[in-house]
Length: 564
Image 1 (cartoon, rainbow, N blue to C red):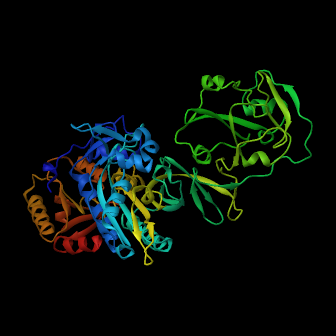
Image 2 (tube, helix red, strand yellow; image 1 turned 180 degrees about the vertical axis):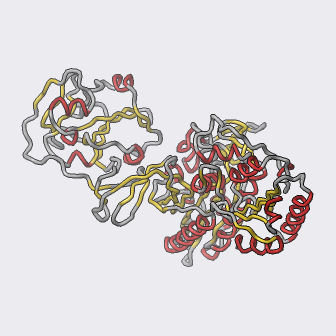
């Protein structure tokens, strides 16, 4: 490809709307173009890399025995209603109505469709196991698209689905998929870690995420410094440190004028936040609930939502709290009526807490559970935090930011049982098919590769997914000798299948070198009057600072060696 003919403009200025380095570089390199919020066109350079990533993914999926299919984006809403996931997906799900007033959705994922497909084709245990996958467009009405290709509303995903007769079979394919994912990331030049994760709206019993550790990641990852175990903060657990012990003392009311936050109350009473109880109010499926947790802990909303089996959970505002008959800033569980109370396990860790008195300007000292208040549920609804002890080995937990680049789930029968996807065993008894699902966002994976493979000059593509392998950069193209050697080398490289981007423009050396660094093609070849005087060409790896002089007749073999 001649650079003068390549569609897409390179930008000198950093686009104001870009909020991550990968987003800036993709725009500056002329690889993507935004049509609307979270909706992008992939230009030729980006699409070449996307296709290479897809090929790697396809090879690794095929190696597991998975079979490729193509399923429709348009899906009947009834399938989503049967599984209950229309409500779980909420406003993320795009709805539309056809000319016959039939309601459809645009697929954000394909568990419903593939399960229906299995139900139509599976009868006996002899039809199992199998795994299907596709590489296909998904649509999600994300409330806050960000980071270019990191969180978008239209994207390409590889989604795979396994179908088994028992849990042992699911475990086998799940392990194969985890290894296939590791292979994919390694081949794409992307270091990742595997962590425990919440299943979210997908459902199922277990799930794990592959994370690229980066400061721009949307997820907080909790890691143990001893055993190395990791989990998304939504899923992470920890050992709660012991609170202040002692015999329960008589409860008493104390004045705390103008003190509403845990920090202010603790400072005023000269106690630690761990000696207080925090009341946090939420609206769960339309009803106000109170979460009670030790003052030095934070509520994990995902855990809370699961504990109370809520479909929708949002933080309550002051007006909603007041309508429930509670005074914001002085709220507490003691004596509270007509509000569901959910308590974290930390309320049992310690004694003689200070809590809100449900009276403006006052708190209660020496509040003890369950002597002074009871809760509908006592469960782990706390966020694990850096400095906590690991629940597995007792080591210390730390935190890093991460970008999700893959997610694998053990669905079990959570969807197959609702859609009638079953099989008959050897004894003639019917059972729901046991499922797993496995997803990788292709565009996000490309953005992650750029995010972790760049420098202050531009992208540093891994060889396996670079849009081109070689950047051929002749300088002073008005020099006939330079042009002759450049044209000949371009033709030779093209003939032997080495993907070459030929910078045939009449630009200055500075402009060409800057573009070469920005685009990040693995090997740069420079031909100039100076290099020819020395009898060769300059060959430089994008990842290295120094170039090497190679004789003209040895250049092709040296390029092959560098690309091997």
